[in-house]
Length: 602
Image 1 (tube, one colour):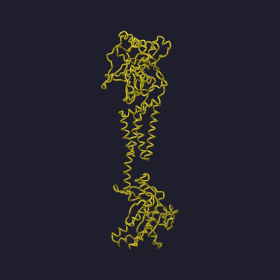
Image 2: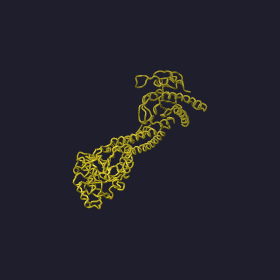
Image 3: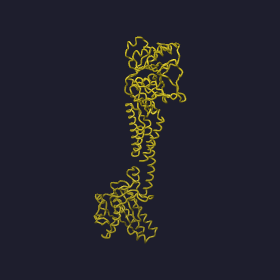
Image 4: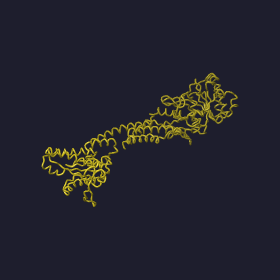
């Protein structure tokens, strides 16, 4: 589990690191645009209008640049129509043949009305910002603000800078100056501050993205920003026909004509006029309709939690289950992103999906490497002690097997050669080992055939277990059937030994079923997967009782089982009650049964 969490933490951290340095900006921007194209945010109240220098206006007035008197007339008409704020998205950086008289007329108009804000363009060169025409005084206004479009790496306009630092002085943007003037908020260095990706202006807060720029909430096509061609306003009777059209509005004056080249790509259009972009920014601020970003801490959790979930799932489920979980989590992130956008939040999902995908792949690779290592260790540990069938079951489902120490119900079998001491004294070491190995091979083969675990050889004795290495519901029956088959195998060996002129060996078998402690048990460096407990001791005692019963009855008793084992097998195995034996340290006696033959085994 620690490795699972470690993988998720490491990859999530790397993903957030790349996100912080715009490593996913290209994909996030495309997804951001897709949201706007698929489901624009709710409509906004129109507080902004545009007076456009469009193609028709250029054809009507001719000779660009126009006389400044035309703009003076427009300012006067707008103020007569009770426009609240007038903004010029025009850089008056060229002289006209009408200078200087028309400049004076224009200057008088804008200074007479106190509600005109002029846009001043800037240039950025070698990361230094300066005014485009710092010495241009042909048009003078007490209110001027920065006109500058901020582009993303693909040259699309999605966000805007509300403040610009020029020569250590902070200037508000054109849109911010107009919007706050409309709202009656005074801008100065004492009221402006950016903290925690928020522009604070007294009690008015504007949420910013991680670059401290405002995401532009483009208005829905169902409620577009009204646009009036400038040339129709030159009609003296224009306000007579439309007396309240400008009342209490922000009116922006700027170019939309094709030949004036003030066009930019945006999320909702590849050709949006600069003046319309400014109008969208202003309207968002006035209506407080902002697109907010997810807080950093919460965003880190959005990256981390799906990665943690997929790493845990990959650890628990098979590859197919992990794949479908990956698809489901990815889909959930996409749906969540759309839901957030509908509620004016932008959830960039590139980093979470990247982290999710990388965690998914790494956890699969890690799982493969770990499982291969575990399989190798299991094969090395158990190939000599259990049947290939059990090894396959362990490898196919590790939940069936555990090296940790735990209590389990199991059946323990002991089989021991009788009078082996006398046999050893009368035979050479080579003869002893040869015949003993032959016996042990035959008994072990039977244990494996009935899916038992060879726990250990104890001299001439064999200990086997069922139900401890893996769960086996019929462990008692398997153990008894194995014991019967061992007697059959012994009979075949005895015939062989007789034909070879060797000593005929006989055995006693004892089985007990009960609770054991199973797991890796031993010294710090040397451990065996074995079982311990009263049931193990009782199985050994019962095996020894075969000799006592033989003596008492006068004929051979080879196979005894405990009462607990008998209760589990009596429907399929013929048994005979022998009696009760006393156990050291226990008040109650133990019933023992002799196994005669199987009702089902062939």
